[in-house]
Amino acid sequence: MAEEPTEENAAEEDATEEDIDVDADDVDEDSDEDGEGKEKKGGKGKLIAIIVVAFLILSGGAGGGLYFMGFLDSILGLDDPLADDMSNDPPDLGTPVYHELPEFVADLVTGECRSPFLKLALTIQVDEMDIETIIEREPKIIDRFQQHLRSKERHELSGKDGAEALRTELTLILDATIKPAKVQNVLFRSMVVQ
Image (cartoon, rainbow, N blue to C red; front, side, top):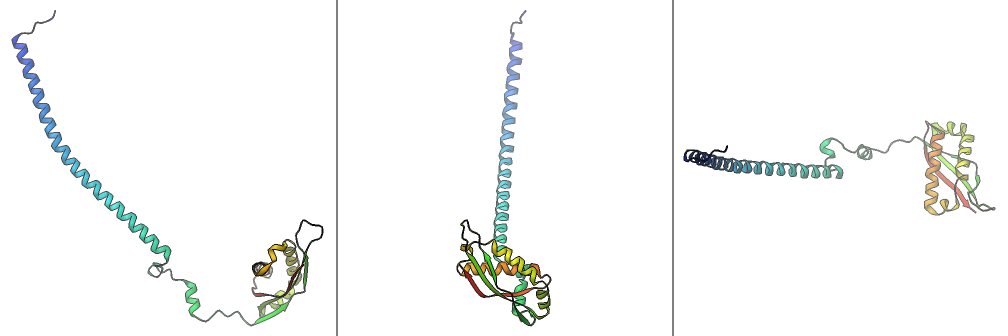
C-alpha cells in the first residue's frame, strides 16, 4: 500500500525542498567567500615561500662561488699560509753538500731480444748534516734506483719531460730511503739512452 499524495504531504515536500535549496545556496555562498579568502591567503603564502626559497638559492650560490674563488678567505680567516712564508725569507735548507753516486747502467723494458739500455750518472744535494745518512744507506739507494730504472721503457725517458719525470721519481725514492733526512735536489751528470 502506497500512500496517495495528498495536498498536505505535497506542501511539506515542497517546503522541505525549498529549505534544502536555500540552505545549499547559503552554504555555497559562504564557501565561495571563504574559499576565495583562503585562495588569496594561500596564494600570498606560496608567493612569499617561492621568493624566500629563490633568495636562499641565489645567496647560497653566490656565497659558494665567492668561497671557491677565494674572495672569502680573508674574511673567514683562511689566509694562505704559504703566502706568509713567501713574504718572509726562504726557509733555511742548511749548508748544501753534493754527493756523487756511482754510474748506473740498466736494461730498459722491451719485447725485443736486444734491449736498449740507460747509462745514468747522478749527483745528489743534501744538507751537510744528512751526508752521513746518504753514505750509510748508499747500497740500499743504488739497489732501489736499479730496480726502478729496469722497469722503465725507452719512450718514458725521451725528451725533457721524460728526464724531469725521472728526476721526480728518483727524488721520491731517495726521500723514502733516507727518512727522516730530505734530499734538496737530484742532478744529472750524464744520461744516455741507447
